[in-house]
Image 1: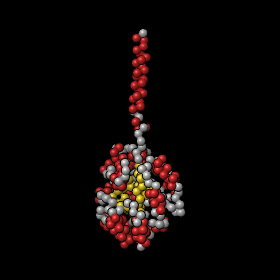
Image 2: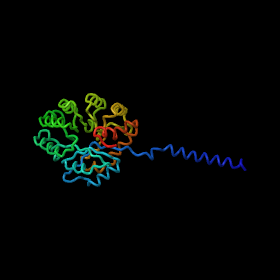
Image 3: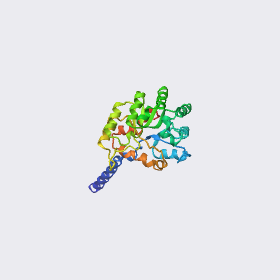
Image 4: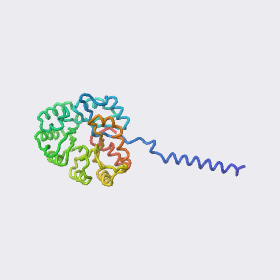
Length: 285
């Protein structure tokens, strides 16, 4: 009888052992997804936001976005988000020098811009100025110089939707500035992005609308992998919800970062997803 029972017992033990190995071989299923910080979030009110505030907060929760850099047109949208900040959603407010859409192309020549900046700054909680649009010699305007002096005086960061010549001028005006570079040059070649990051230690690259990071199969290009591994502390993610369609696609936009983050070394991925923002803005863990 002992010999007849041995084989079934052995097979049972092998089966149970294999189940245990299978359970241990799939830890990712039980691991929490990386928290994300959205460094380019517009909650515009023209005349009302696309997504009601409660729905927006639920959308952030559902997509794993635990923090946002809020900048809106007008700034009322940012005030509304900041008033609802919590441990679940940390809000970093930036002051946008626009009241209406038309300001995008004229703010840097409008003397009322500094009036707006000073009025909004009295709220006492803005961490930076931007996103603002500025290209080439537009950065040489007296209004921009006044804004830079104001930012230096109050140690505010900048969020610039700018080309390389405008960034060069901004850093000449404010060499110690910390500037978030919206879209990181859109389709600028990786070697030029490398040169800018190397030249300006205060430049932080934000990746919304940034082309060329992956190929058609979703694989990170070798050039961008090198950049991320060379400068793991210099990149942020973003959605850029500047139009209604971006809100409609918000879950996809933020979710599309996760597959290529998973291709990076885990510590690099954690820094880009959350850690860099946590350090820059002193976020709670």
